Image 1 (tube, one colour):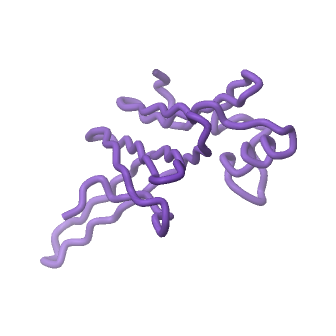
Image 2 (cartoon, rainbow, N blue to C red):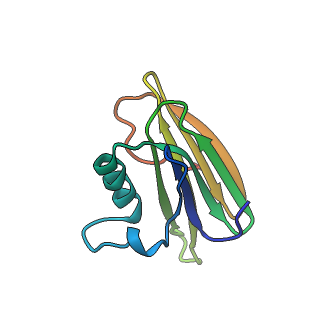
Length: 129
C-alpha cells in the first residue's frame, strides 16, 4: 500500500506509473488521460490501477476491461446556517460489458459499487443521504 495521495497503475509492458510522474503532466488534460493516450500510442493497456489516500487504498485488476481513475469532491451545505463539510474521495472504475464496478476510498472508509453500464458516467456518492 502506498501512503501517497495519488493513483498508481501498471501497463501491459510491466511499467508502473503514478499520478505525479512528470511525463504525465500535460496542460491539455489529466494525468490519467495522458496515460490512456500513451497506451493508445504504444499499443498498451492498463493492467491494474490503485487509488490511494494516506489511510486507505483500493486496487483493481483490469481483467481485460478498461480502467479509469478519478476524484470525487462533495460539499455538504446546512440549511440551518450551520457549518457544512467537504469530503474528498478517490475512485477506480472497471468498465465491464454488463456493469461498471467502482472502488471508492475516503478518509472514513472504502466502498465498492456496481452500476449498470449505460448512463453511469459519474462516481456514485459513497454516503448518500
